[in-house]
Length: 318
Figure 1 (cartoon, one colour):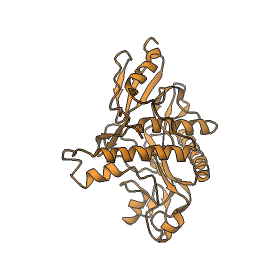
Figure 2 (figure 1 turned 90 degrees about the vertical axis):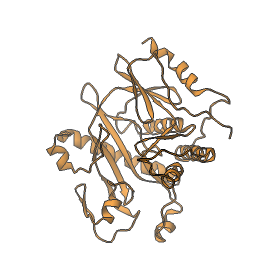
Figure 3 (figure 1 turned 180 degrees about the vertical axis):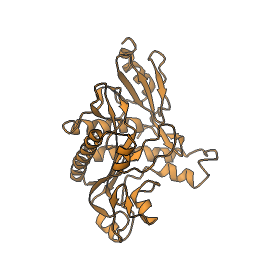
């Protein structure tokens, strides 16, 4: 594959109300629309550590596939796609609870049920877990494991439904609505993934409310960054042998960095170009496997930032 230019940032002075996120550039239009541009920044260890060519396009187009295939389940924020890296959506008030749905005892973070289970917890997120479960074992049914959404850069914290209501984070009606949406979305995602030879083990959803108070699915859905996918064919043998399930391993860069420094407190060493290229290929493979369609590569020599700016010129005058 030829070399493609990575998108490190997209600053467009003629667009209003710029906000830089970890991986997205955002512009808020006066009419209530928001422009979200997915860059190729790879965020880890509380900072951007690399740029992976075509990563932003993969995530935007994977989310598009899922938004279009779940629009009958719940409304989403999408209005249009003026560029392969860009979605224009409704500006929402994001709800302060992140909705994580899990179908397996898996995960590595401090809020994952596997981590907590191995530390001895049996009551988690309002659910009771029996003794004797194994790493990456299927749960009897999918469960919601909500966490507080740390807008200020703090750490997410596990929540139960009772805590969400008691703290006033969501109303009873809001909680019932997002719970219904999340479980239905996950069921659709698992069924469609199964057709592609994949297991959707867990995922996270972000919801917001519009000006009329309607709950809307926001951010992204069922992308390789927001979800854990395993290959179904090799799962039974690997599970029986106590091995980690085969997945789209995009953590080459994170693992490479973590073995060479303290990434939270020390400078990040220069990451080899071949490692960046390998990760880019994994993202493309993930898109093609998840969606069952070929990935539309940019034209040779194309400057993606100039392309994005050109495609967004129409919004400058609005």
